Amino acid sequence: MVDVFRALDDETRRLVLDELSVRDGQTLFEICSVLTMRHGLSLTRQAISQHLGVLESAGLIVTERRGRSKFHYFNPEPLAEITGRWPTRKRTEQ
Image (tube, rainbow, N blue to C red):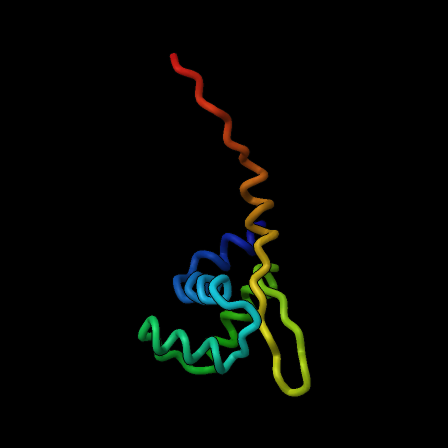
């Protein structure tokens, strides 16, 4: 669970997850393009690739290789585990 919190600690990684939640199955090129166009981030492909590696090791994204392309998919299960750890209770009026 610590890996998930560390992965979410970075704004760029949160933006990557936001974009994958909007449109799943993007390649590195597509992710770099959308971060530049929509968010004005001009990071190198290597920097984005490193961010994707952190997200993947935390289990927040899964990848699939098809030919020479690698597709990235958002995996919400680690976030569900976090919310399951601290279930909300209805507050009683006092």
